[in-house]
Length: 403
Ligand code: UDP
Image (cartoon, rainbow, N blue to C red; front, side, top):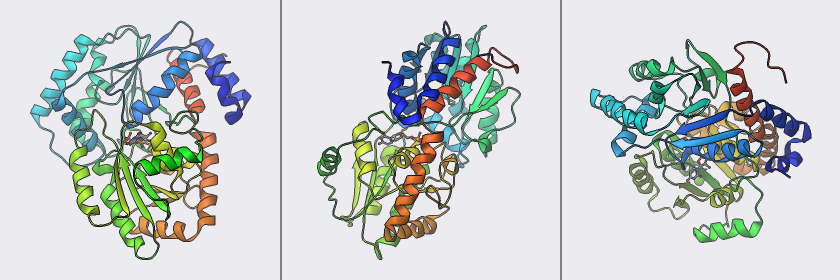
């Protein structure tokens, strides 16, 4: 029995059969993924699951990671922020650093794939190595209101790719190359998302010294301003006066995110003096994230900007009621008052939180609907199918792919 068969009880046999059929069509092709970090953040999360599964069904998928120093990742973080619409000055020196590290990677990274699948801006200049193979640029960022200068800089490279992939229709800009809309996904069988026995969940809460005496409200995210952890604390404080609860803000740091320590210090300052706020610095440990999500009464994702927001799908899959901002790919996952609650502000988040804490039946229904929505739309099996169709389509410009 292959790994893929284990998904049959979750998504059904026909879905799995389709994937095998598509995989056969790709036999002999090497799909080379390239990104900038092996762990931390949504991109690494997805590649860690999708690459082995593609290999399991016979697609020769591989994954390479570019290298960069602290300065390079400070620049790429700045790119990330201003592409998301945040105001910041990107200097000529920043571009020099980006170009210099890119040149080192152009020399160091072999682009052997029949299809080179480049994720996000960090490795984008590798396109200089384009030969007669196919190149895809996968954008995980919400670039609906990007900084024009940085976007223009990136366009010099993007336009040379064969295709670009975005996560939501609203992100997709005008481009002279083919574009595909593919939402990310979660893996229901990964340590992050699989069912856990209650004793495992209890042990994680005990490990972090979080009592389970009151409803627990949790946001799990990198400590990043765009995830708005301070907004979560503010919303919690508004609600706490009326509905007793605990707040967990948990997160680790990603190798390509230098801002984390600063934001963490700000959050600690804001939480000072309240023993019911638990700030947890997590090691990279999927079981712990899973347990924290499962042990929560409500999961929040109060991002100011978001690519897709995998944490939302993760929580919905666990049947949790989720309160999340109406940004990026989150509205694709949450239909307001049906599969979760959307908010636009701290007040909105607080209102939603009060509503869910006071009405557990409503909260439960939202969680159930959310789980079914994720089953249909955001599981890895759907993602595999979209990616394989994308790969095949590169060899069929506009015509029908015969299966
Ligand atoms: N995550 C994690 N540990 C942490 C914080 C986040 O494993 O301490 C995971 C989280 O469960 C999710 C991913 O990292 O799978 C974050 O993806 P998302 O799309 O939510 O945000 P990104 O970090 O890519 O902006």
